[in-house]
Length: 170
Image (tube, rainbow, N blue to C red):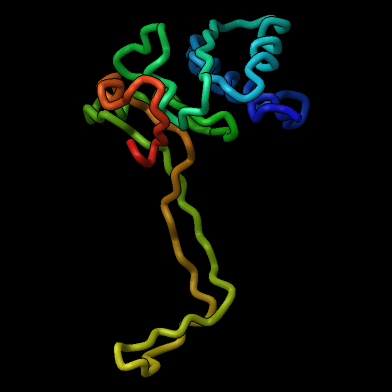
C-alpha cells in the first residue's frame, strides 16, 4: 500500500527518521530518486513543513540502488551519501565522511558485524568422505552491508543513464 520511505515506524515515517538523523549533523540537502508510488512520496513532502531542501528524480523504470544517480540533475558534490530508505542508522555521518575523504576512497561502505548460529551440528568431511570432526551449532561471523555509502562523484562515470545497476554490481 505504501512505498518503503513512507512506512511508519512509531510516530514518523522511515524517511522522516532518516532525514532527522542527517539533520543532527547539519546535512540538510537531499536528492531522492523515486519510482514506486512517487506521487505519494512527493505529495507527502509538499504537505509537510521542512527544515531541509529535497529534490526528486523520478525513474521511469526501477534502476537499482545506484542506477538512478546518473539522472540526478543537481550537483551531488565531490562526495555524497547514498542510503537505502529502509534502514535507520545510529552513527556520526560527519565522521564517516571524514574517513572517506581522509582515505581518498571512491566508495566507503557502512557495515555491521552480524553473528549467525547454525542450528545444527556441522560435519567436516575429508575428500574421501570420512568424518574429520563435528562442530555442534557453530557460530559464523559476517561483515554485512547496511545500505549506507559515501561515494565520490567519480562513480558517476561508471554509470550509464537509464541502465539498472545495484551497488553490488558497481
